Every structure is written in structure tokens, then in C-alpha cells.
Length: 199
Length: 136
Image (tube, rainbow over all chains, first blue to last red; front, top):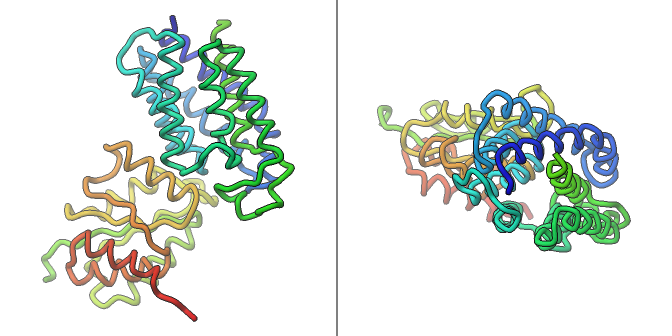
């Protein structure tokens, strides 16, 4: 079972992962975006870490709802409301339960991904976060390692795609050949679930 | 008329200068616009290019007279942040609405219409109609 501590460890691992990978995310974003994805997410997740230390929410849902709220407030780019909505919707879907199982997390994350698609209007294949998140949610029933592999494959599979959402879509065919920064950071977020499970 | 409450207008741009200038332009072009509460919410809190949820919430609170707030945005994170804040439910004043309109032309139409004492629906419709203004 996954308790509030698990979700705090997830957010801490995500913060550390974004810190480690910020430069790579910004490099990917400089190819097809505005070169701020790494630094934006770094600022956002550091704010998440601070807020979780200060408020110490005691249910899985409360941890994710607070984290999502922080991302919307502090990121300053489109990834803020998108990741914020992902975590907040997931948190709301988990409700007040003090513990949840992996199947409940998968179902809640699916609600979160649906929220992201509704907010940003992206569909699978548009070269966005969704291309990593949806395969991860589909694979989560087989465990965190399977979700991680699916998300990483999904992110890599954005390389030959042409961007159809966001600033990268202005580049048209020139967006082909670059891995999507949002799909890459989504894969990092999913990968850190496994780290949180290891304790 | 001068005691009537006006719909508030919030202008959200990635750039503080763009938001402030469009607010000034819209008020300058609208007769009676001094009665319309207009607030820019441009850039990040640190003065960089981007979107700040805090600046948007502060601007909306500043222009709220209890009869609705129309929010106009430029693109990308400005649109998504306002949508996410509205979905949140408790961050923005009641009756805050993201208006689907071109930023500059829509802002002028919104302020002109709000200056007449029109309600939020009419302000929204006027701003959206600005999409129909063809230049050639």
C-alpha cells in the first residue's frame, strides 16, 4: 500500500531528478522551445519540496493536491499549469484515503492525464507530455518498473514526431528529430515513482 | 452611471510591458474608461518573460467590483495558467472568466464595452467579436 510518506518520497525524488536533469531539459527545450523547461521545473519542484515540509499533508491525495497547487503558482511556463493539473487531479481522484494501492494510483493518474489533455488540448502523437504519460498509466498495472520503461519509450518515440501543440508547433517540420522536453520530464516524473517505492 | 459597478478587466501577457501598455492603450481609446477597473498581469514576479499565477490572482482581486472579471491573455502558459486557476475554484474572484479574444483588439473592445456599464456577457461578446475585425 502507498501512504502519504510514499507520495512525499515521490515528490522529493522528482525534485532531485529535475535538479539533476535541469540542464538536459533546457537543452532539449532550446532546440524546439524557449529554453526554460529545466529551470522552470526546477523552480516549481523546489517550491513543492518547501511546501511539503512546511504543511506536512497527511494523505496521498493532500500531498499531490498541494504539490500541484505549488507548480501552478511557481513554474511560470506552460508546464506549470499542465503538471499542476496532473498532480492536483490525481490527488483529488485519490480522495481522503490514508493509503492507496497501485491500481487506485493508476486510475487516479489516468484522471490526471485526462485533465492535462482537457486543459492543453493535446492528443497522443502531438509530441507532448501525453506521449510519455499515457503509456505509463497503461503500464502501471504491471508495476513501477514497467511504467518507467513505457514512459521512457514514449518520450523517445516523440523524436520523429512533428509538434502539434505549444510553441514547438510553430516550427512545423523543423520540430522533427528532437525529443520533446515535456515528454522527457514526464518520463522523469514517472521514473521517480520507482525510486519512491524503493524507500 | 458613475456609481454603477463595472466589469473588471485583467490583461495577462508574457511581458509586463506588453500587459501594461495594452491596458494603457485600451483605457486611452475608451471614453469613460476611468470608471473601468483594468489591471495588467504581465511576466513573472521576477520581471522576466512568462506567466505568474500570483500576479494574475492579485490583478483579478484588484479589479473585482462584484460584477465579474474578464481575463484576456496572449498565448501558451498565460492561457493555461488562467484556465487552471479557474478550474481550481477558489483562487480567483467569483465570476472570473477567460475571454476568448485577440489580446490588443479584444482588450480595447472589452474596456469600451465595460465603460458603458455592460455586464460580463456583453463584455465577453464584444471582446470575442474582435476576432471578426479584418484588416485586409
